[in-house]
Amino acid sequence: MKKALFPVLVILALLSSACTKQSGAASGKVTLELFSTKPENQTTYQGLISAFHAENPDITINLSSPPEAGTVLRSRLTKNDIPDLIALGGDATYRELSSAGVLLDLSGQSFLDRINGSYQQMLYDLHADKSKTPYGVPYAANGSGILYNKDIFSQYNVALPETWDALLITAKAFKAAGVNPFLLTFANNWTTLPPWNSMAPVLAPADFGLDRAKGTTSFAGTHEKVLEQYIQILDLCGNDFMGTSYDDGNKAFAEGKAAMMINGNWSIAEFLKTNPGMKVDMLTFPSSNDKSKNTITSGVDVAFTVSAATKNKDAALKFIEFMTRPEISQRYIDEQFAFSAVKGVDQNNPTVQGVKETIAEGRVSDFVDHLYPAGFDLASILSAFALNYTNRMDNTQNIRETLQNCDTEYNALQ
Image (cartoon, rainbow, N blue to C red; front, side, top):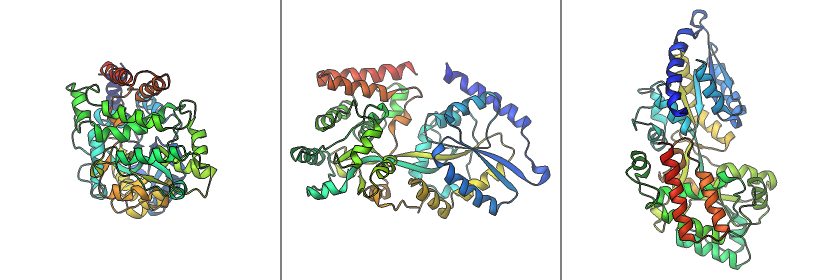
């Protein structure tokens, strides 16, 4: 019901907003609102906005970055209150906004030439009609793979695994030496997603997301290998993964209590809070035995969009042009410890150098859970799968029932 109501509300919002918004053009100065769904980058935004103001004294950008931003944004849309600029992730909210006609078509804007095509395609893949209309400008990305303790690998003289079989050999070697190979933190169920998001793009059919939306395929029959390998990871995990929280797991990993964690670059800052001298890096998740097919999971963390109803279109586009300049993008990713969607802008922090080559080669897969319908609670499904494992359910039955649950929940949202 919520999905059906959303487009109607935003259309009404567009009509009303177009009639009521004040451009400020009469005074020669304009004020725009930048609405951000990512509170963590407020300080960085404020610094960059100040630099923009210095260059553009006739334009004022007011940053709005509330908690529970997605909910706030939906509420504002129902009140005919659409921000001029919206910075959001490449997720279900972007899909709904782009599909409902709320966002300005940015075709022809020269700053699009600066953007890495693989990240632009990730936004296209979210469009309900799969059109290649640029309603958003990918700006920053995050990455997920295997985080590893470099000192432990060095101490036990273990090579970095590049294939699935090598990963199992590595993990078993650590286990035999009394080192926990994998530290998992499923007390927070969202952390069940990274292994799935790493393996599914490589092991499931390439067009699964599109075909599943058409109803021509199903999780059952296509994702068994993903869960079979998932169970092999659980077999080698040496901690109480259902009872370990994300915070506690990060602290334990930083203290050297495991060789590897399966998560993203956002965790590294948490490790360094506990152990500032920790030597950590990320490696590409070796989902298959064909190294060339293995990918780093990286999704659009921040994309800039413009309201189709704004009276300050030129100023909004000028702000995006400013933000996508390589030197500005470099400042953003350095401060935010992110990956850039802007060509030629590299993340040079030593803690993620292990995936730099993979990204440069374009071996990047989006977070597949971003492609599932809004409300599809894969984290809860995988949490139940992991709990079944701890309760010693037969693996074949667990896999079969988990994939049936995926299909049942997906179908209920169609």
